[in-house]
Image 1 (spheres, rainbow, N blue to C red):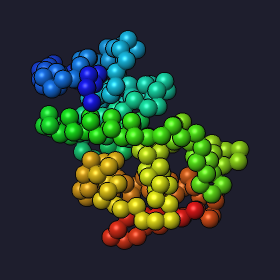
Image 2 (cartoon, helix red, strand yellow):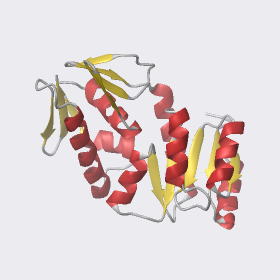
Image 3 (cartoon, rainbow, N blue to C red):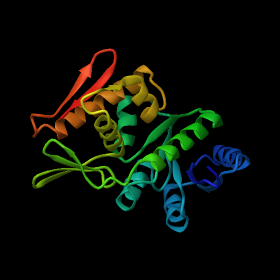
Image 4 (tube, helix red, strand yellow):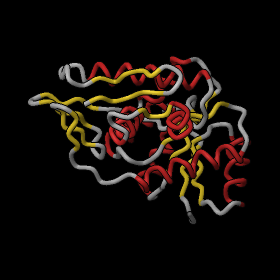
Length: 225
């Protein structure tokens, strides 16, 4: 994986330069913006592979920026940098289209692992037009879940989680595997976050009573359809 183009939006100039220079010494191409408006301009000019966005920025915060970009691009990976660690803050980031988050302070090695993991995950995804799950039609690429005349929009994290559940349908999806794959590690905080996303998927699939997402305590989840 070479010549990865990163859009880094970080308003703290010294931290931004440190991250930029550290990534560049490892072969990345980095476009650094110090506010959300500047970041959006760069995004429209450059064909970047991934966005690393600080949450708290002047002119346009990271959540707002991500929400606007998601209206144009559903696929580009987004990592949030945040000093916040409350579950509600992290979930807000995911709901605005984020794929991952990194709490400050962080190590460059961890950031690079997260970047490469997200890009590997994107390249491994098929261009899925339609997957049948009971009476639903699931489109991973468009992140939609359609049942007869109704269509639900899924977040990135919801679409990824449902895709892995479908791949293992009627079998147990290992809890540790999916936490490491989608959240980066299997700590308690991320496990609680995953439980919330499982609950959201259950609600969005509730109109077909033949579909169940069962919690296999101590092992993981099973999509029955």
